[in-house]
Length: 440
Image (cartoon, rainbow, N blue to C red; front, side, top):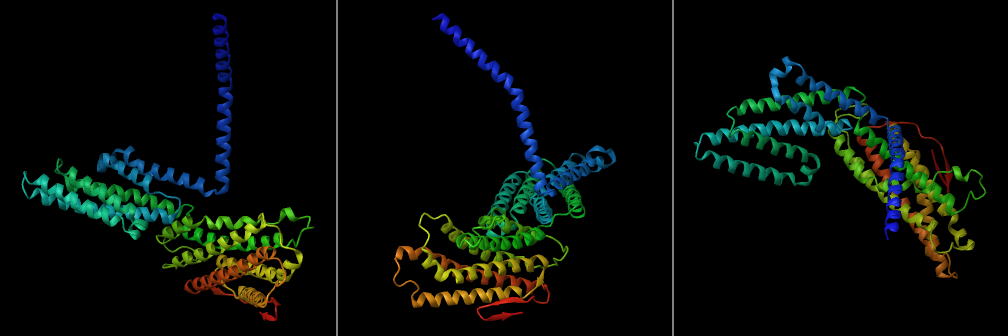
């Protein structure tokens, strides 16, 4: 019995010793992996590294109010509010920073003003009634502010401002009950917040600015282009037009549309941030940012239909016989390729901010192909075929017709954006005719 216990103890000691020897290697591996991930993360978007340095610079500058006596004497311990303001306000883009900064500045001013007013009103009622009046004021103001904060538009653009308002009002009014220097407290807090906001705004704009509006513009163009690439890839794979192509592996994948489906929250955030930004580059004041939401909605609708179309590439249902698919192959190929070309042209229109009618030719060809396919379906495409063989081909054809409709909606939205934003007009490029349609 004792021998077994000794052997067990020896095994435990050996196991502990082996884990102890492996610990330094695991630490080195963890550090190496983390460093590699950080390097790749910075390579994906170098602006992230620049943003980190900008935040560090802003905090260092406002910290000077703490380090030098001639600056510290004017503000005292309240100088820390400038540092806190930079930390909570500085965001990745100019729009996000301005949104939080403006909300914080206005909320601090109004909250401080009402806080002083509540304190003055409570003080005038006498010592016995003062805490009652002050408590009622806090209850009334914070309740109303909390209710207003729940409104959808307020939640979207001013949620942070409402929170800062409640915080500032309570800080000034409640702490003023024990501190008679309420006005000085409110003035100091507002001054330090303005110092933090000024440092943040100047560094954010003048040192490698990141514009949310520009990111939204590029994201919209990229999403539309991804739809065009996915449609072209689907046509190539489904109809096997390049089966013997040696460069098949180098062709773009079909699943580029998946990025579009998951981009809704990012687009809405960028639109919200872009509204706060001043004029920059090609984006003037009152730029129609809301139109990007409409384009994004139609783009996601098209992406979902491409997703449904893509299911037939990996479906367990057998591929339709050649004699069935051949009857619709030309029209389906035309619809997918023409929509693909139209989407790519629309992406170029957005990227270059130029009005070009080139996409109209591709859309007309796609619409004519869809109309011809509907006529064939009404006249009976496969009267003597097995329904189980017909269903997959018919489903693909119907989805492509729906994609043509979605592409037209995207084109109309982009055309509306070009009018509202006053895109420049360029000469059209001659486009090959299909189905008797010639467009220049």
